[in-house]
Image (cartoon, rainbow, N blue to C red; front, side):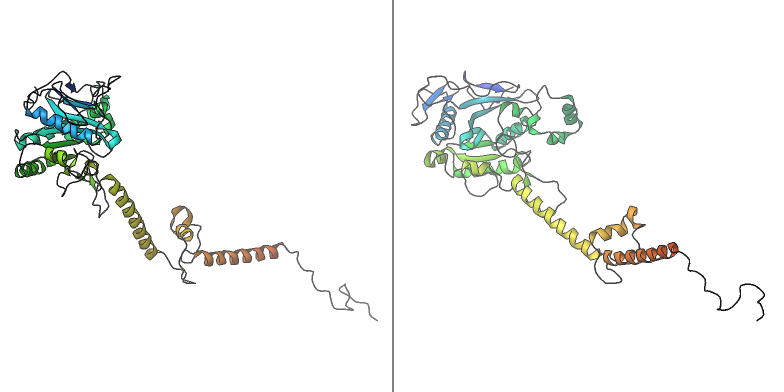
Length: 376
């Protein structure tokens, strides 16, 4: 089943859904004109916007004009655009992107564009966004059994599967930012009020698909957001692109205020980079807090009133060394003095024990040695 919102297809449209299929053909050798192909129905000179053929309807003309403005702004190589690229879902539904551009040299490795002339209901655009989100969560057919079993085990298990193991990474290059393949909604031939209403519906009803999540961390004060499972969504109008250029500040990220350049709108300044900084700062603060608490608990020598060193503290508390630590209420210096005194006393005792016995005193002079003395 195909997207009923697409009304015309051409010989250059293709379908993505199987690994190994090329998403973009290389420019033919000797090509001397910068053309933007629109499903084989219409082509323009990208530098001038001059139409070179007839389109199937106004929607195709809007797609072509959008591609022309992107190329004119340096976003997209010649023939680097394709239209109506199909993305097959698990239920065989094919979600077709109006326009796909890859412009790594412009900081946009890949971008899917939906061109809306307000012929579709806002909730239909939410459904398209949902399908792009679902496609970004698919595994390739040759995924390893362990990963397949993990994903089948519970609905959110795919969140823990690296993007490199998913189907979309077989088709598109890394977007250079957190999240899935970014999507842009370009509104044409409509009013500001209708655009505002549609964007409001996208922001509210499509929140599950574009909104970041909170990082799972034990640290407090982390304001960074996890965009890893979200589809980055930007919006603009064809009139703004034509008036200011696609490289100007005409793009707005959902829920952000004000327009930005395309790369700035796709960036996540409150994402992974901020999380790493806040986490490192939180780790440092936690380390300092624990060190302060440890200092409060550090023992004081009952003899000299000096605090224990870390080594002495460990000696007196560790099970393997406490039995040989002597008086555990004294610091290392005092303990060393005790050991020195004990060793000196022991050495003196050993010296005394090893000394020969002293001779007995001589008898009184003139006294005979026998029991009887000779009479004078």
